[in-house]
Figure (cartoon, helix red, strand yellow):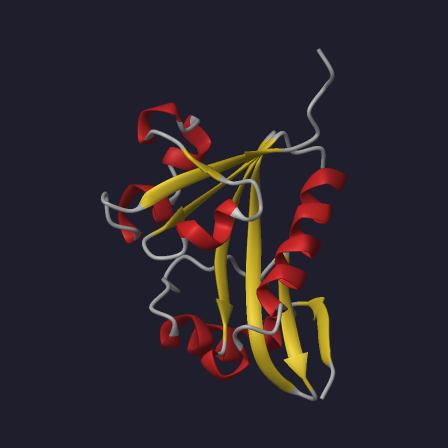
Length: 149
């Protein structure tokens, strides 16, 4: 079956929350209307999700999850590529993420661990950074839209 990537709609929220909960990811702070969230569907069944929250020139990649039965098929990569394109189009300079288990995965996409103290204030003030994710979680950064020196 073909997997289709599309923009999340508010009526996808319940299925997204279920998938995130299944993957032990927080749902308490999902933004209303799911702006800058993308989903992967096989037929009409949600099999993947990822979101991007923007704060000025920086963004927070969040809620990247794929149904376990569909992992290993490149779905997360397609979702991530779509959000990175969105971030570039919005002229974001840096993308951050917080993970407890997937740092090895995200290094494949040029994310690198960064000290929590170096994370910009807008990201530090998110619920993900300040409380929903444990302080032991790894924070990673990827630079975008780099200007030549």
